[in-house]
Length: 189
Image 1: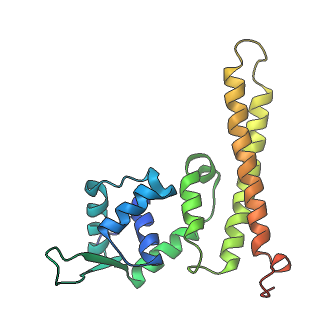
Image 2: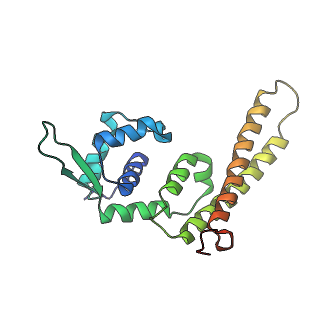
Image 3: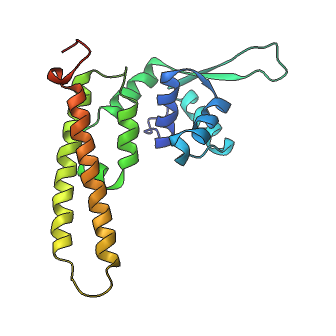
């Protein structure tokens, strides 16, 4: 058994399979026609990743309807796959995640539903807001030290990045309110 941690593509496949069993073709279509389009929908990427997950026991595959000329292989997440996915989405949010892996953070959050309880989601959002706040402060310090003369391109690019970090922090705080019991309108709080 390979103890290597799944790649981001493999986690995306696990999360999608956890939502519903799919064929390789169905995974490819998700990557072509949804906001997950930044993942390669190439058969040369998808099928080897599915095979690795199958070999590692995180997915299992079965041949579907055998009455067709080309029976389709359907991939289903295993209990080991669910546990690997749960551990991944529940990881602590770090400053490095915020700086280098914002897409991964959103992918983790998007797969939390039905996989972890609201406390884990709240912890994720709280950690995300804290790390984004710290990163925004360090960017603001850097921005204030930038020279005011010369072409404005660098300053404007820095301000765009800072605006994105601030926007993400606002989103995290608003999302957190959706999970707090006093804010729920679904009768659970």
